[in-house]
Image (cartoon, rainbow, N blue to C red; front, top):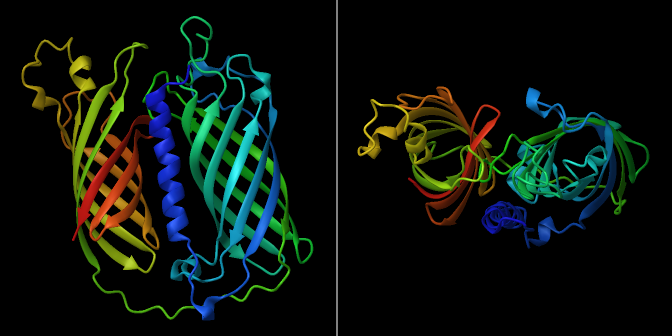
Length: 375
């Protein structure tokens, strides 16, 4: 059966991203910006395999397989200032599906995710692009102690999905494009339910796209005003849940407090320095065998850390990439460094929502949801 808590947590990820995308990418009503939208339909076929990033995963699938993807996207032309800053990207939503080589252990994989497709190099005939998307993934088979004990990769049907794609696009005619590229699809529940080694699917792909509106696009160029209020201070509180081995145990709450300073370096990005305090209650369980640890003093497991941050701005929505190191860790089984990928969106004046995935390099630690204040 589908874990209800995992469903709600992952559904929250897709809903939050979809809502902020819709609001961030909404149309201006100004007559001067009135232009018929340019929608594009894309069919993409993939050929790849499940990457066994752990030796214990070698048995999951040994064959290559195909995957199929249907996308609908909209070409931006400058209704928002950030469109111009990112060379007028496309905004869309995709449905991705594969039978994963008919693996009796993994079953089928399906994902639906909104995305932004960034043109890195633009030419009259050839474009080189990078696409980033995140949403929900569904796996028809997951770990089951009785019926599917060999699936050590994933413990839940519903998962978060991250999709990265690079492609080279060739303009065939005024409304038809052909492209070839490399895609990386990832399924994980952020250690909400173990096992959670994750499923990674690298593929090579070909696509054919059709532009419905043949009218030439009139790109709007904004006059970029000087940057003001370059300095920013942050206060963020997050919480989440995680499981640890052995499989079948309870979910442990996690809390963290972050203090940060950001400086805006240009119109689309900021750099920052932050101080984190993590309280991960599962560490109490991990330290039970440590005879020098006082179980009554639960504050000993607090992990302070320092992080460096890079933030990309898309109007109100922002994407933050952080790399950090622990100053002190009573339980250092995860190492001394951590990473965090976050989405932030303001809800009222200086108050914002924060959704993040914390990892130790490629190993997910937990998904967290929080609220912050900046000044």
